[in-house]
Image (cartoon, rainbow, N blue to C red):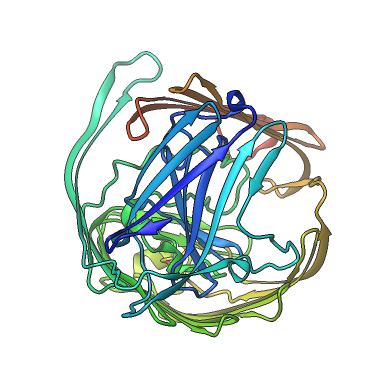
Amino acid sequence: MTYSKTELYVAFRAFDEDPGAIRAHLSDRDQAWHDDWVGIVLDTFNDERRNYLLVVNPLGVQMDKIETWPDGGAVWDGIWHSAAEIFDWGWSAEMRVPFSTLRFQRSDGPQTWGFDAIRGYPRSVYHQMGTFPRDRDNNCYLCQSIKIKGFEGVSPGKNLEIVPTLTAARFEERSDFPEGPIDLEDDDVQLGITARWGLTPNLTLAGTINPDFSQVEADGRQLDINQTFALFFPEKRPFFMEGADFFETNLNVVYTRMMHDPAWGLKLTGKEGANTIGAYVVEDDVTNRIFPGSQSSNATSLNRSNTSTVLRYKRDIDNRFTLGALVTDREAGDYYNRVAGIDAGFRLSDTDRVFAQFLVSDTRYSNEIAEEFDQPDSAFDDWAVDLLYTHQTRTWSLWGFYRDVGEEFRADLGFMPKVDYRHSEVGADYTWINVIDGDRIDYTNVQAGERLNIDAGFWYRFGSHFRIEPHFTFENMDVDQGRLYEARVGQVEASWQFNARAFVRAIVQHVEYDFNTALYSDGRDPENET
């Protein structure tokens, strides 16, 4: 490993007694974890809380992410370069990482980074090695990492990145099912642009107009039958994924997919010394809302714009304590929702951690929304608290948990579909094998039942270029009167990888629900298929 003033260079030789057993496939970025790979871990702020992970497989496919410890992280696609080749003794790989891709502390002299070099290779069993022996009874991985010193005179620079996009979508529907013609219902073509500028070596300003949706594929289908609360879907838009880990807290009060169709947005993220800051403001052309409850949630989507603002601050105190504050605000005419609170994390020992968070909310809905969804007809407020203690070793886990969320607490920029409840528990487990069994409630008819759920799938590669991944979910429920419903969800994803940077992909989804209408009183159809 070496560096210039602008780039970090890393080279690996991965020796193998049986080079024919090396697993290497061309695949999409971040999708080669089942292959052989080598990589580096960089704790660039040396705060033992957050690191970059950069990995490459034997064909040069890149995988990267930002990890936050002990159990967090965010998707991250940095701009860096890699190459790899297989030989008769094993394989080699090289990385060239511009310092403008990374964030690190401002310093005129030498810097200290936490570091690990790692290699993984699956054979009959999975192997992974690193540069230091890891204590599995110490839940602070980065505290054990090697400390490397150097990088004097390097700087991430005030780099400017501009990404223009063109997105086209077309929607057709059969007007008279099942024999009628398929008519055009809607088509749309949008130009957009996203830009990122390093204001300082540690602060990045990002802006977007019509954010890039070209990387957003169809969401994986989830069973929404006999579900009383809103379903969670992960964020995939690059503008929101950048620096997403800065906004994470135990209570999920920042969920960027609540911003459905942003017209424009600005975001500032970075870390200066022990201080981490994150802020963004977004003008959204659609207002999505979840109306939470203790037994179920409701939702609506309104074609009216709103302005959403999030402010986040964290302060590190040595390598054991973190204090934070969070504010969210969403406004649209006579509607608003505001949330503010504080949180803290304490690493008491190598195996013991405590997390605490307290939030208050202030909300007002418009008269028509309040009436339609049975919400208060004037301004209302409430609070939420979350406490968590964990003791974790390699095989044993102990925990104590307490959460109290008030009936009128609202986090409209987050994902909290359940309110008006108090939950506390103390537990322990020994890691060996996981088995989950139990009955299920039929929420529609309010009765006990027995549920069978099977979730199965696999992927297979034909050579280095073609990959197919079928997935199937089946569920049924029986009550005293007989079979209540059956549900089947199927998805097939196929992709052809031209090289390490270009692919074409197709996704087909099919959903079928069959209901025993004699056991329902809501007049539903016996079959629902999409």
